[in-house]
Image (cartoon, rainbow, N blue to C red; front, side, top):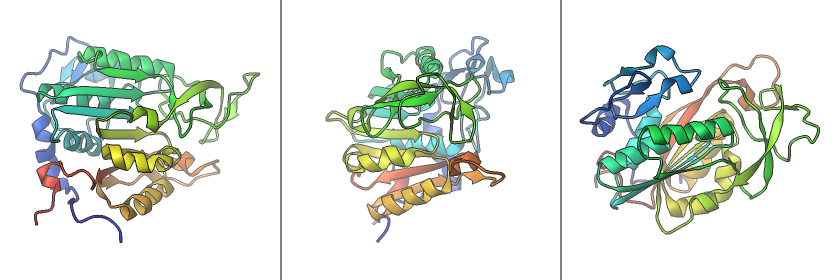
Length: 312
């Protein structure tokens, strides 16, 4: 049997009602450099070179449906929103492959606003983006509540290699083994030859440690999601209420469905990745032109958003 009888999938028409409670009553000033959204989150647009720079110094009260135009689609906002409903006075979010930590920051800001004690962890292997995460946390007044871990998430404590990226490239992924000692470029999953450097790793076992559950585990790892999630699945089932996965090929999506549905997780919402199979690539992810998303609910935790629970 696959799936569970506890959770209901999220329909597109329900998304506004799920997101609306995150709306901030008093929006902060954009100070001429931020994009301020409906939830009161300030994003330093000049820090993000791929973002439309005309958003600098603007405020929007619109819900991010179908997208916000610079950060993500509505599905990831839904994942954040449903994770904020729990039976505790605390909230915990772990963002792996964090970039500038948009979800860790937003989760902590919204949880604190609702009166919960909140903590976040953001894991990012690329030094510039790790600094962005620290800046974004400070810009939203939660830098003391978010730990930025400059490392790559993997299934063991080891050393891997990570590409040296320019500012606009958010598609970096680790390679097994250390970087070439002579600095020679290595081929990445897209078929590009890029200089790599050594990075230390952290595991989900260390990130999820402690007695408190993690309300949202957000994973975005450019095609190596299975290598990180599946070896830690027993622990994830014990500790994580909601799992949001940025997906980068259909194989990953299918494997997650086949594995998690058999273990009584519920797939609440998804948008499949899109690929164009032109030419030759070293991996399926190399063909992907638009990432996908999956939002999973753990049936072992019953303190879910009322819209997600099937009425008996």
